[in-house]
Amino acid sequence: MFDAHCHLQDAAFDEDREEMISSSRAAGVSHFLVPATDSASFDATLELAKTQENVFCTLGIHPHSSNEWNSEIQEQIRTTVQRNDKVVAIGEIGLDYHYDFAPRDVQQKAFSEQIALAIELRKPIVIHTRESEEDVFRIVEEHYASVPPELPRGQFHCFSAGVDWMHRAISLGFHVSFTGNITFKNSNLAEVVRETPLDRLLIETDSPYLAPAPNRGKRNSPAMLPFIAQKVAELKQQDISIIMQHTFANTLLLFRIPTGSIRKVSGLLLLMLGLFLGASNVCAQQPGEPAGTAPPDSILTGERRKAAELRKKQEEELAKEAELHRQDSIKAVQQDQLDAQAKAREQVRQDSIRVAQQMSDEAKHAAFLLTPQPWRAIGIGGNVGIASMHMGVTGPLASTSVLGYGFQLKSELTHRLSITASFTHSTITDNIPQDSEWNHGSLFPSVPYAYTPKNFVAGGETRIVQGESLGISAFGIDLNYIITKPSALIKFYFGVGYQHYMMKGVQNYLEMKDSVTAYPDVRTFEQDWSRNGIDLLFGIKNEIELNDQFTLEPFAEISTTGLFDGATQFPSFLLQPDKTDLITVNVRLGFTLFYGWWGVPRE
Image 1 (cartoon, rainbow, N blue to C red):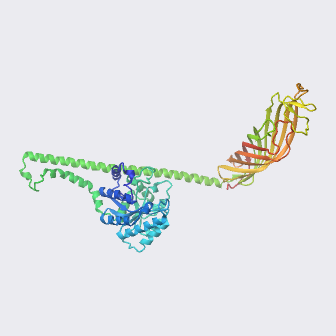
Image 2 (image 1 turned 90 degrees about the horizontal axis):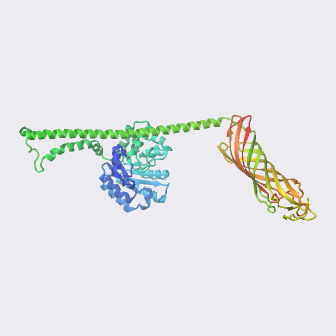
Image 3 (image 1 turned 135 degrees about the horizontal axis):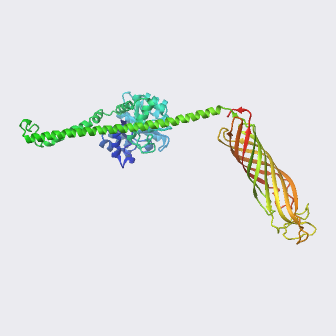
């Protein structure tokens, strides 16, 4: 196989580059194309191509490094390409509008001038494009419109655009190259791969980036190229050997790589074996001894004949060992390929199962949406929570929070709008210390009251308060509106409404005979009064369909009510709600059971 784009000179391989290349060859990858990306990478790229067999390279300035493009680098590339047969293309060049590491006009200038250089040198180009297809194809078409078809075009590396862009690239004479991203679960390139003609298709790893599944997230290397080949084979419904043969031949043809390198690979083992078998004969002949001067076998002594037979036997045994080693190497490579194919097939199977399950779930949900929803015509429920009312500062108590309960009657007007009638009740109580006295003056005082412990006031009524309670009941009506989608599992809503508060104050006290003596009987004083107000609420709820008529709706909400100015307690009460600044807060948890005798569409 031919890895048509891999950055083997990258620092990610500094620790184990030789081992990585060896393992890649063992995995069946015999040829490598290594692109440079900036001028700093030229030397390492050229050295790698020089020292490694069947490693070829390209020189160019990547769009990320377009700021460094100048005439000196242009001349350096021209001279190197003319002198070095292993530099087979100009690249990696192009436009990248995702990161914009260089200004776009600078990218376009560097891209255009490098294409012109490639046409001058009759070399193909390696194109990088990201979120820049319009400008890339415009510039390419401007340069190649008048170029004869026999001149090489190039490779759209790591192709990630749509089918239409692929056909446009093919029509311009370019090849399309796919990498590990076609194996990702969220890949949208399946149709592109299927539509790409076999004679214009290349495969690559883009190492050390874009490792294919099931190794996504790890360091990529050419050893993972079989996973990509297998995915292409599955998408095009071809045997993997067909994909390997076509992509190998396509890469050689595009980059004008001499076919002698193919014969070198296939004949490498035979050459090694021949050299190994002939080594003993070559070494046996003295450096200064001319060929053909060894005595013929007919005049060999018995001792020399035995030595020759022993040497021949040793050569045969060594040849057998070399052949066994060759067969073992072939089997190991084949087994690695089979394992990689099995893993790739299993990954595809798992992906297919997940996709099928997702499609099944979506189909079930779509079928569910077509069923009628029971209309929540009328609902009855209850709630419990905490009620808080602010008390007047003139009394001995301030803010008071107590447990409360309530009931509600609801009806749904639309999928989003509903109406609620509610009743809530809570009671505030307090046990007053026995030595507390409250000077009332009279039942209808005309002057402000005063708290005077142990002080007898003649002409009025002095009390020792034993305890008090304030019962708070509220009737309300609210309009609620769902602010999330009606089909959402958890729905948020807000509401506004009217509240009528009814309060009852009860005071238990002992009346004083004089400044030290109290009557023994505990007396009770009561007062009823009411106020009106506006409330705002916010809540969340869920709807559980019990059957085609009944729906259970758990909810949680918080409401605040501002009461209008109005009646308040007599001054003799210690529990005194504010007269002009009375705000209540309620936090409630509850449920409502709805009944509807007909169904409606869910949306």
